[in-house]
Image (cartoon, rainbow, N blue to C red; front, side, top):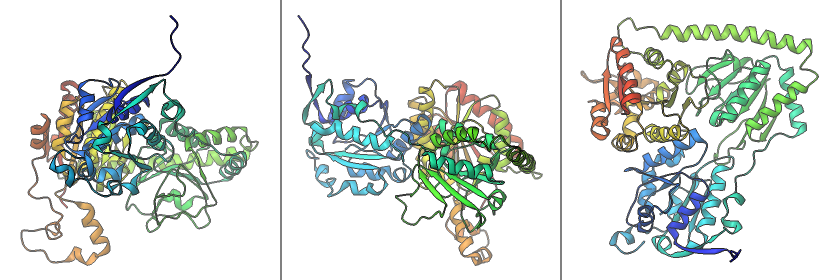
Length: 582
């Protein structure tokens, strides 16, 4: 008997429809913090109805969303997060600021209490897309629409809610899917490049420039962006500066690399001398109070979000700006340069050769300065550059993926890791501290999915930031899901950033009298003393190995053993590095 060509239907709950949409769209990782509104989800999990989705329990919502962030940052594919009603949404806390998603009424008394008038308002201003699934019949369509926003530039989080009644109510899934429920017909926007006139303008400006400069913060979020920048900058010997980088964007071992800058650091010479500045995918390419281009410099801007649409007060005066996929635009520019009649002239060759010579000299001088601060401290105390140099040596031959949430030591980590591959060093992208721990779990899962189990994930964090990361949850997750990572804690006895900010604005505070036996940080209420037993917390939560190093002579052994424990024993490791107290 011939098979019928008519579509078939399958009854499922609203929760199952949501999971079906995620699976159909290729979502493989779902981080959950479950509650009493989720019986329909629990039933679907228990029945293993969606085997392509791996479910990971996170006792804390902040860690769940940070884990989804870490996974997405390394794979370029979104992960999903399921939390419980408005309480779970608020538990996402600062992770929403850093990146978010939620699925969410009345058989127990708590259901009335948590039924708030506008749950979506909690996170609305951070979302690329937010909506409520009011009927299970449109659950698949709304999930796919949300994922379109997530994956289309400028990429960002989406937030969906659904009441318990919707999650439990049954609907029919149509097989094959109708167009609005077909992931292949609801794909993300295709990357967009530059038009011919814009290519000609930029190509000519960069070829004619004597001292051009490229500034970026997150072009390296994709491997294509990293490689496109490396290829184009090398083609014309254009120096590259990373301003408050969220990703590593360019090889730090290249003579073209001009370093990193967050707060402080003074005027960047390459920016002051530049006649053409190409800003690519950067929110804050420079802070004018400390470093800025010449008034005569011509500035051009390539970005996935050149208007910074969610930032109320923002300005970057420039000649022209374009909303593009920057990797595509740079590949176009490289091709245009090679085809340009100017490229092969003796004049351009002389300009490029002179630039190479000057930049190689500058790079040699910078490397020497960085090497000098890596030397063993005379008093035997540990400095961050010294520790980084020894960790680098101990990890020689091992591919390191670093998560940098070192606050006042962001630059020291970035300057001394000597990373030169895409996704070697990533950050949270926001100011809500505590991303490192869940992020490390997600990053480990991402590497495993790519067959890179031997890579070493290292989370760099300050002592205060470590506490923000809900470590009891993170190390438990790392043990349960076999995602071990090394944590390096810079213990300076407190929160240095607010202290530094206070002194910058109120310099008179630095000279204020302090009672005997106390420090200024005690008076400013930014001291973390007595210091927590960081290693014991990690050990109790996730059987982590730990060591505290207070002197330079103990660093090498701690680094070697920590790396061995993570790679061979598959256990997390913590090194508490005691540095000068604030």
